[in-house]
Image (cartoon, rainbow, N blue to C red; front, side, top):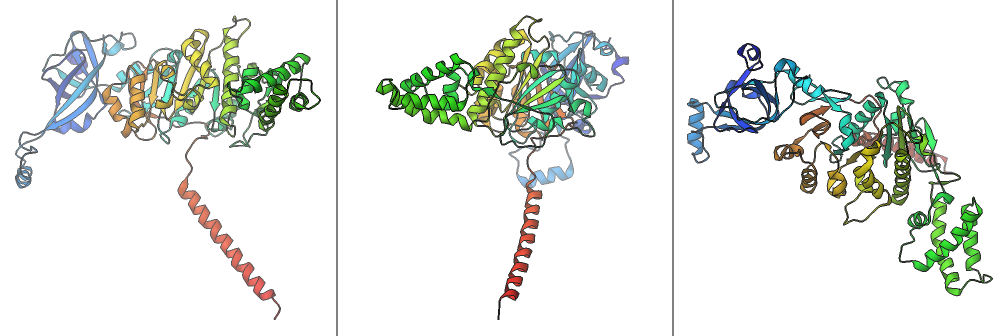
Amino acid sequence: MSSSPDKLGSLEEVGIVVGESSPSSFVFSVHPRLSSKVPRWEYIVAPLEDGLVIAQVRGVASYSSLLRKDVDYEVLTRLTQKLVEECKHWRHAQVIAYVDDLDTVQQSSYTRVRHSIPPGTKVYLAPERLLSEIYSGKGKRLSVGSLTTRPDVDIGLSVSGFRRHLAIIAQTGAGKSYLAGVLIEELLEKGGTIIVLDPHADYVRLSAASDEWPHTLSKRVYVFRPAGSKVRYPDVRNVRPLSISLRDLKLHELFYITGVEESYVNIRKAVTRVYKELKDKGEFSFAELIERMRNLSSDTSDAPKQLKDSAAKAINYMERLQDLTILGDKSFDVRDFLRPKTVSVIDLSGLSDRESDLIAYFVLKEVFKLKMLPTELGYKYPVFVFIEEAHRFIPPPAVGDTYSGDFIKKIAAEGRKFGIFLTLVTQRPSKVHPDVLSQCGSQIIMRVTNPVDQRAVFEASERLGHELLEDLPSLARGEAVVVGEVVNIPAIIKVRKRKSWEGGADIDVEQLLDESLKEFAENEKNEIEWLVFEQKSEPP
């Protein structure tokens, strides 16, 4: 058994259980010379009955009975010079699993510990092969990085865990979009169907090949964007048109995109009359819509005066349609997004908030409708939807509703039954609808320093303890806490290097300032040369 001396003898002993223990936690004393080997978040094991307890160090403490805070500084100086006492080092460990046998971890059941570890029990550093087996798990896994305390232990996220949805949370600059790119790479390699709502063009460069991101994968990434929109990266590959036909807009959608509020009752009546007449005749253009509105408002119209006046006012709102880049001759076909081993990036950069919201609404609505159909009529493979800047699409009730928010809530509540799985990416969890955030069964949380956002994260996650919450502000760029369905037990990881091109990185301010100085010096030189030329050219 794992508790036998011959099997644990090969492990490094680091401490002894002391004081009071419980089935969920215990304290152990560490030899001073070994203290550096047992930092916070390190993994340790201890024998219990016929099995093995796996625990994680959550608290680190040192104590001296002589070097107390009430002792004068001069006395402290003399005491430290004489080295009359070695500090005592303690660790508080949180029990995370119990396995039957060290050699058969994959076959063991990760059960809850029902008994406390007796004081005097020896504690050992967990072997890397044990941690590797735990975090590699069963089934398809997404390789996202390694443990921060054990760089040689790879972390694989369970694909099945995505069925309960995922939230990636971090403040700006912590690496959340970079991490989302890693997940997209992994899902694509495993045949996933992925849709990305991309407000800032952070993912469009996935379509470009690199030394590590081969053409065979990059060519499976398609960028859908409205023609003529002012995009961030105009030169990306695999671009496809994205538009909505004016005729396919329902009246409430038309009112939303043009800003005709519910209180504008008479204006809505005028638009409704003209819009229904045009839809009954078939295809129609923006020009025809405006012409009909003008005819209705003209002196020669036989309409009542109030309707004429309302039609005249409605023209100002309907003319806004001319500036919208999302309108086209025909609407997109959702089946263009839904193909095996394909990433469809919906490039929303350069669009207004309402345009972005309406595009997201149409995409999610059509995906949901298709996935609800019987397998032979719809799309049978799972669809992974990544929503960057999620707080823009699903704000809390106090802020108000968005069009796309209704379908995001619907997918969060019912999507897993039909094979639609959400990944929400946000730097402001406090500005995301709490009901949707709480539906995410897994969270990957990077550096978060805002107390309001920390509280929102804690309230949304059932598995994020206070110790993990306290560490969020100190996480380095690229480090993350992973909890929930995608991992067997919580982990603090270092995200691996991406294979694809990154589009969401911060600008290099220092480099740009250097280039600015260089351009200034060149311009100044040209101005001086031109001034000298002009002076020489002047007649005496």
